[in-house]
Image (cartoon, rainbow, N blue to C red; front, side, top):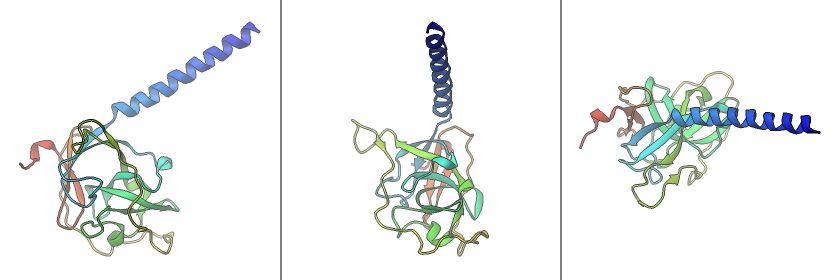
Length: 192
């Protein structure tokens, strides 16, 4: 009897240490990004700061806000919402369809393009009393009517983008150009 109790206690302790270590590692690898463009309005407005954690493909769900590599410039990062997942690909859209360059232009993107998950807007500049979890569903159904082909799709149009210049894990700025794509740049490049 005593042996089973001790073994169970050791197993529980070991599991707690492993889970705690994993969650601690995730928390340590968070990154701040400042939103500079309107493509994710009204959810994310220019000037707001979001905290991100590394993305794990199996954790992706429709409705999540993610940071991903732009298909036209691998060094360019954009903030979009996962609209749909199918066959290892995502349909990524901005919340403002009139000011966003996204999968409606690019087509389906590989899940591997997703680099980080946006977890919270911090601090929430709209309310000093609370932080907001950014995971509400998009306002409209933006998923395409057909599923992606197994061959990679080529983008229909290429938006202009800026190249990121920050260190990994340092504060970054997400910039949305007039075409509606977001990029990450270092805070030293901020414009007043």
